[in-house]
Amino acid sequence: MSRPLAIAFLACNKNPARFREDASFVYRCENLAAALAKQGHKVLCEHFTRFDWASSPDLVVFHRPQLTPRLWLLMSWLRQREVRLVADVDDLIFDPAMAHLSPAVLSGRAEPAAIERRFKRHRQALQRFAYITASTEPLRDELLALPGLAQRAHVQVVPNAVHHSWSALGRQLHEDEGGPAALIRYLPGTRSHDRDFAQIAAPLAAVLRERPGLRLEIVGPLDGELALPPHQVTRHEKLPFDRYHQAVRGARVNLAPLEDTRFTRCKSALKVIEAGFWNVPTVCSPLPDARRLAHAGAFAASTAAEWRHWLTRLLDDDGFHAQQATGLRARVMAHANVHSVAADWLQGVMQAPRQPASAALRA
Image (cartoon, rainbow, N blue to C red):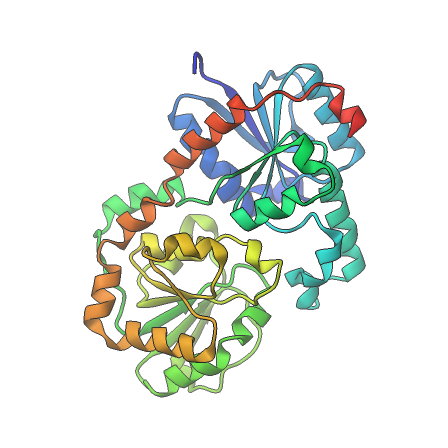
């Protein structure tokens, strides 16, 4: 590339004052931005409502865009100035027919009609981009199934990667720090994971009852109780991202259950990546994105018997656990290095044909 680029990552979530608290924006935008800055580019992370109209970016990324008059006007203005525009999405949030499978609806925390309207605005926005990035292959396929989008847009898979700040932390700490022999950890990031956890509550409780010295630590919001002695289950509030690594490190086994729906099949195996960086293997639902991590910390379980099998083996077989945990960080980084992901992302974006300024009016 002949010169450094000016690249703006713009959040499109509801609250401009809190967009940096969104874990999705942290991984999809801030992480890429840090890697691109290290490569010499000028980067900006901001909410789209606070975009500086006097600036002159070469490339603008809209994270989870929803069509509004303000967004349409900004996109049109940028296209007139021949700025490359990219939309990024990391969940199946653009098909109104899928609103009933949204975790927010399934958990009773949102009305289906409200989610349908939001998903419709996402779809309307995405259909106005010539270049879209998605976090997983199933999500890319869902995008390409949108009416007419495959003919108008290129969709690139840009997988989630280990957060750039963790590399320095990893060098400061012992490379193969082992987790306690008797600690399982579950990290629900939002209040929408009650149903996911319910899928494994019975086999997990059985494993814990069989091992009185084993503890389950839950870090984050989760309703529901397990019929276990109080000393075996501890709960902690969700940590801010700059301290989140403290919650991920140090367990024997990490848990990542998900209900099997069309919505969840599009999700990223980020929980596997996060735990694996700290040499903690994960027993997880058979997420398509987790397949690439089959030899990098992911142990897929579809049934209660499979959950018990992998938990038992990782907890009781010290040799097997050591084999899986030793060097796990390096195996994860082979799949989830943000600097490699950023380089591939930028090459794909810059090689794509520009969308004409009139496209915003025709879409």
